[in-house]
Length: 137
Image (cartoon, rainbow, N blue to C red):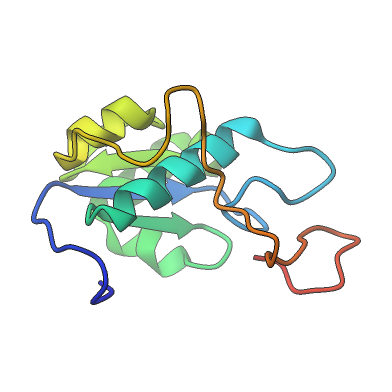
């Protein structure tokens, strides 16, 4: 954990996603709005000190094999069943911001007014996708 983040001991949220170009939801020809929202929600809670890890099957397969709950899930449902989210080892679906806040024990998301989602983009962010000149996120 970064020294600049507050340290909060709380439930461990682990997100296991299918093989993706990146975790932002802005890659490829179509924007995945749910993934963009989820990415912003995770980033927000991580900056609040939540214990959240995100694993992509495409670039972190060892995390899937090392977790018995996830390995058993993949054996039954296959990678088509992903994403899988666990909270202290208990399986949940892709939670929304309110559920993530409740799971992590961080109940007062701050900084954004209701109805506004910070997608974590800035004017210095590099483009991502097949036509981008930079590496993917």
